[in-house]
Length: 401
Image (cartoon, rainbow, N blue to C red; front, side, top):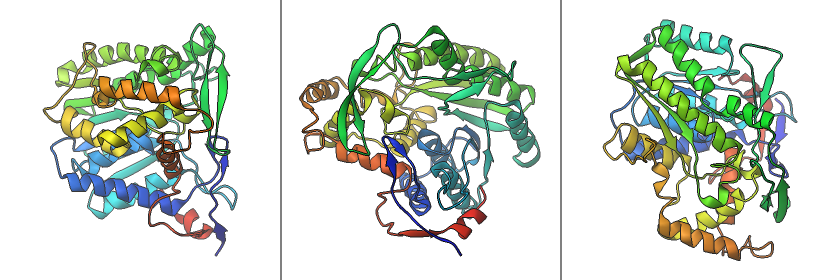
């Protein structure tokens, strides 16, 4: 038996440790939330691409414990290796989700690997045919990746960046390790960086998944598929709506149209949903965005409209994808972010952002405490009721996804 101390470690805005028991409790808490909301009619066989954390995990949980769906999750995660490398949070999320799903008689199959590759797509197709009833009726595409290999040229690797376009942008960011506010300047993306980000973060691979699944005959009549986007307020446009990520999501709109044409004969539906701002591993490294979040969270606290991923995605599927309360914009996108984008809330957020300084950002003026807590909880820390100070490494290495 090898006992390892659990220590919360941050390197700037990167987490260098994980609490597996906290991850387990975090998964169970999300399941309990969905179960309390009750069952609703939806998918029966769901495939979640990028289902090990944040929006993808929340989507998988509401599919399984809200809709009663068997699920397949595809994600790229690392297992525990030794005392210094205990694995990634997503590794444990996958395991504890599967255990919970199986405990109520549901399939919770996990595929660990690169979702962009042809080999992974074929593995999933084979599994659907042989062990999953032959067809799926929902595919959620929730992938945030740093790179993707060109499927037509294995020597060419596209790398995504979160940058502004045409002009440099300077704004405040938050260093969670040192708990300080600092100014950061990001140079504009090059044409290659823009193109690469479209290849990685756009809808290209989403399209390929649907093409191959349909060709294999594993999409059911009435099949639905959804990809997540983000628009946000004007204060974040430089990196999102008008930056490299925004351009990538614009390309996803084109993919959506292609997919819809492809699944019309199945009476299928291709959707893009504009998600709300949440604390993620990716979002906290973007200048201005953390400042916006701590202002937003404070205002939402007073209005009762703050949503963590499970609350947001359960509402999306329960009310909009499978319910009768769809909010759709003129481009045809689902808009569950309408609570965040409420005009009065955004006006209050903008005013608050002007008041935040390096000296007061940690006070009750802002929602910094909630923002930091949500980041730590991604990796299993600061979870109520979890007090373990050490783990059994032998026990962890025996767990399988």
